[in-house]
Image 1 (cartoon, one colour):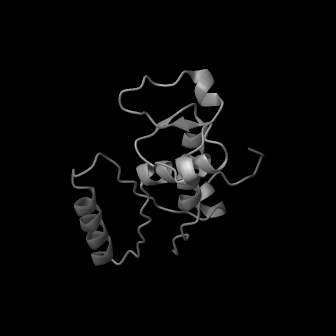
Image 2 (cartoon, rainbow, N blue to C red; image 1 turned 45 degrees about the vertical axis):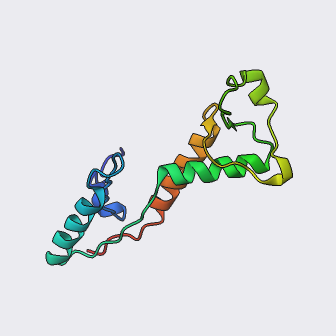
Length: 131
């Protein structure tokens, strides 16, 4: 920080208040979000919800990966041993171009990184609060 520079970043940068609600399926996230939004609105605070399903996003990333050779995931086949890493890295294709979507297992961090990029991109697109 330079001499004479204001150290109050709240004055220099627009602000967002985020509440992230995460958890397992069927534990009350939707109920909690509804109650939080109702309370905020009663207090005169405008709020938006950005639904983001990590599983659905990861599933979509595996479908995209199928389109580029399927090297970042594999689909386990009942009764067959899991493929070796060398087999997975060779990629895979699907008969008649119809990819089986589930089950799938990701390999490495590529699909996870793409999924998290989409999450944070959606958060960065939220509107700034007006004060």
